Length: 173
Image (tube, rainbow, N blue to C red; front, side, top):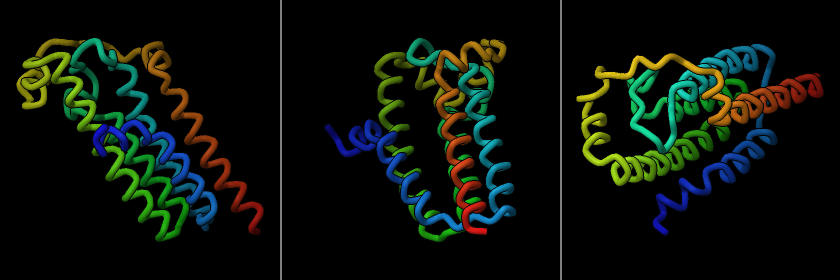
């Protein structure tokens, strides 16, 4: 297994390790918490929007945010990470987030794009070049699809993480 495949496969575990470090190091204030939460909610909204359009492993999705970017789920995750960094108010958390997101998201994108090329061939290559982004699919957002894609797990993760940061503020008062 290549390093990229290993990082892509282990990104959830590495995310928990990064979250644990964040929990220990974070020094949130109510102001940083609310600002970070607003940013994270925007990131999760991007993820929910994308999850409500994508049919994973079945097609090259071109509706919703996929018309503008090939990886809106990962883009949303990066926005969520930025929200956590703002809320945590610690430079080591910022460095860990950059390292974690930079390595694991890059690895996941490379692994996913290789799969899409193997599975969909020229259709994916044309989409990646933007030839197909404005063509076809007028699919509407579907909450049922977002739930089937298990996006609720990310929503719960954001809520639990920010609840913990709020508890940390309360206990430090």
